[in-house]
Length: 446
Image 1: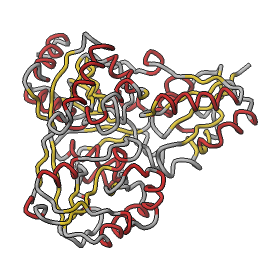
Image 2 (image 1 turned 60 degrees about the vertical axis):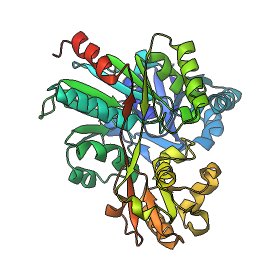
Image 3 (image 1 turned 90 degrees about the vertical axis):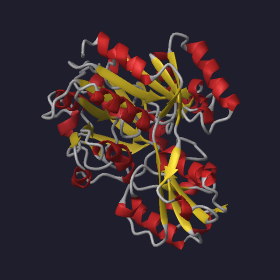
Image 4 (image 1 turned 60 degrees about the horizontal axis):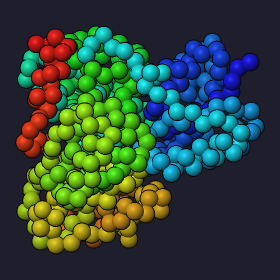
C-alpha cells in the first residue's frame, strides 16, 4: 500500500525533495505541498510536466501551511516531510507537534537522499542564516577561480515564484535575461550581481536538468559553484563546503535549521561582518564553531560598505531600504543601508511605517521586528507599486538603498537616491585563496 505524504515547503527545497526522492517513487503518493514564508505561492499546482505524468497526471496542489492538520486527517497522511529553511528549532518542533498530534510522522530528508552528484568539481557556499553574506562570498570565490583561468558556472538555490513549468531550467547571462524570465526583485538581488560581472548563473525548479545543462554550458565549465539560499544545505554533493556565519546573530548558527547542518558540514567557515559586529558576538560564533566542527578552517572577514554619493547622506534625514528576505524571515534589524547611513553621518533614520501602503503594511504586521527599515518587497507588480508609493510618500531627504540591485530601474523614485555597495574583505589568515589552493590541487584543476 502506498504511503500518503505532504511536503511542507516554501517553493524551493520542497520541489527539490520531491524531484529527488518522490517523483518516481511508487511507494508514496504526494497529496500536496504546503506553502509558507513567501507570498503568492499557495493556490498553484506543481504541474504534471514536472511532477511526472505517470504518477501525477493532474499535478500536485500547493496549499497554505495552516491547512496542514485538517489535510492530514482528511487525506489519511502517513508522512509530512519538512522542506524549507531558516527556521528556529522551537518553531520546527512546534510544527512537528502539530503534525504528530494530527497522527502523521514528521520527516527530515538529509543530504544522502537529496544531493545530486556532478561530473564537475563542486563548491557549495551556504550559511547559518539568511543574510549572512553568501552572495559576496560566492562572488569572491568565483573571481578567485576565474583569475586561475577556470570557467565557473554558478547555480543558485531556487526561487520559482512564477510559472513553474516555464521556470524548470533558467540560464542568466545578461541583465536582459532577468526581464525575459520575469524575475522578481528577490530573484534579481541574487542573479544580477553575478551577470553584471560576466558570470553565467542557472536556477529554476528541476535541479537534475539544471546541473546537467550547467556542466555542458556553451561558455565552458570547469567548476560548479552552488550559491545557497537562506540557510539551506546544498542540492549538489560538494567537494568543498564554505559556510558563512553572522556574528550579528551570534548563537543562531546552532539554533536554526538547517543552518547548524551547514556549520557541521563546513570545510571552511567565514565569520563575516566582523567590522560591524560586537566582540562578544564574534567570540560566541568562534566558540560554537570550535564546539561543533573543530576541524573547520575559520576565515575572518568584513563586509565594508561604500556609498556612491555619501554627500547625500551626511546631515540628511534618510529613508533606508534593505533586502526583503533578510529583514523578514532572516530577522535582521540592520543591513548595508543602515551601516552606510550611520557611517556617513545621517541626521535621522526616517521611520517608514507612517507612510506604508498596501501589502507593505501587511509585511510590517507580519514581521514587527523590522522596525524603522523599509524592506524591498517585490514578489509582484502590486508589491513593487506599493514600494514605489511608500518611498515617494515618505518625509525624507534621501533614500539609502542597501539592496544589491538598482531599484530605480524597476520603480520611479522621486527623491535623491544613494546606492550602497559591499564586498567580502578577508582579515588576516587563513584566507579563501589558501582554501581554494587546496581545492584546485585535490580536484586536479591546475
